[in-house]
Amino acid sequence: MNFFKKNQMLIYVVALMLVVAGYLNYTSTQHDLDTTIQATTSAEELNATKNIGDAQLVSSNTVTTEENLSNIVNTENSVVEEESTETASTNTTNNSYFTKSKLERDTMYSQMIETYEKVLNGINSLETQKQSAAEEIKKINDTKNSIMIAENLITTKGFSDNIIFVNGESVSAIIGAEELSQEEISQIQNILARELNAKIENIHIAIK
Image 1: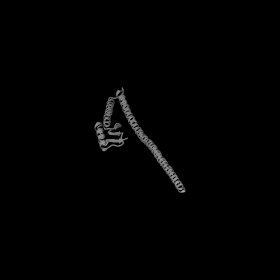
Image 2: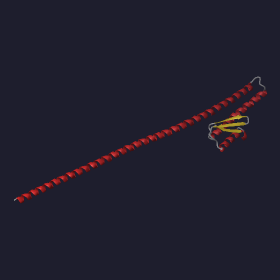
Image 3: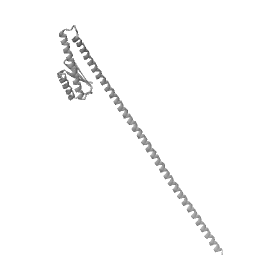
Image 4: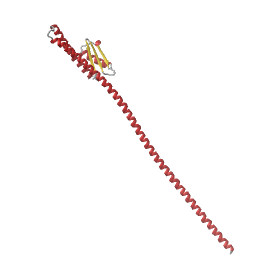
């Protein structure tokens, strides 16, 4: 009888141990599973945070790049505007020079013609004086017409800023250009020689 009771007690103990072992194994498995889930969740959250950081960085770089590009464009525009302003200022100065010089030249011719006309129309002027005055007036008008034609022809060559001065047999032309090629110089010389009846050695060309 004691033998059966001992066996029964041993069975209970073994069964209890099995139950405890099973519970401990379940608890350990559940803990590992929770740890894995937490680790996975943390990794996903870390990746999500990293991706957000990358997007912000790209956005920041994009803004910076656009700002730099805008600054570069603005700088280039400023340089172009400054160069355009300088060019416009230079062109204005040159235009003023040519306009003023032509006005002064034409005024001089007008004053000369006026002086000769006084002699021509003077009561006390001699016939020889009147004849000489008439010839001088004709010569001045012919010179003015020849200058006008020559300047217009030079303009057609691409030099809108130009002025011609005639002093006896000497003819001087000032051209608004940074430089002139030999071909351009020859073209201008030919125009001056033909229209003003000047010799090549008496023609002087300068640039401004």
